Image (tube, rainbow, N blue to C red):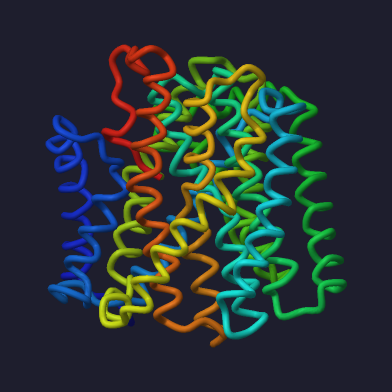
Length: 407
């Protein structure tokens, strides 16, 4: 098969097994998100260091699908009723401020307007797919703190996807806006129809196949992802917009199903996503990371530090607007740090810049490097601040927020 490297597949599968073991061992000393180990291991075995895994068309396809599934899971986990009202309004206002500040910073740093817009959009992202499993494992999703962070993540993933579709599609903003409106109309109508449920016959089929080879729920998920991703691609939009909408649609379809069935379906989806496809995306992100361009250019290393600070300033500070009323200073710091945690969209945006030839390889590596550092550093500090805000109490009685965390 063209582009198929059997040894690379074995190595990546092995790294997916090793990563949680390393996270568990290191977790006794320092709480490090699992995704960090996956990326770092990918860098080590990639062309930049050991060269055991080369870039591959086959694995690249799996990686792209893993990224789509990551955004599907993010859309599927968002409870829009819980974050509607003040959290979502404040998060949206904060993102608009981030967009203006990010584009301004990008135009100052970049040699062209196109590159400046790409940098600006990258700086406005929040890695909801990375953060939500941490919040869930820490028992924070249903708290005012968790709802604020979820609102920031929802806007911080959806907003940049809209901006990508409007400004990086190669069309005029007016034409891109019309196409985007068409997609929103179709997907929104599908979600609206799904939300009119419950659909007992559909739920009965899901229940009847949960323990059989039929696995209707999982097959339905794959179909919905494929349909909306293909629709977004056909319309010339970013595929992640379709994947995110697919998650929202599937959640609406299963509304009203038995609680036990919902939990089992979620378990199966997490197994497929975080046990198979999503690790491939993060490991392959490490494999394809241009470490040579970064370390061979002192300016690029400096730029990575600048981007990391800009993530805090451009995305973190406006994110504090979504803090719940009466939030402590430590909680506000933690919310800002979570808001500034970004990687998947940064990877997607920089790839667009590289494909269009408007972003230098060293600049792209600096942006992705800053995103990696944000995933490594910001959640650690944020959870520390949250613990201190709670008086040092553990975030969850029997689950660690950083071990076995994916996304």
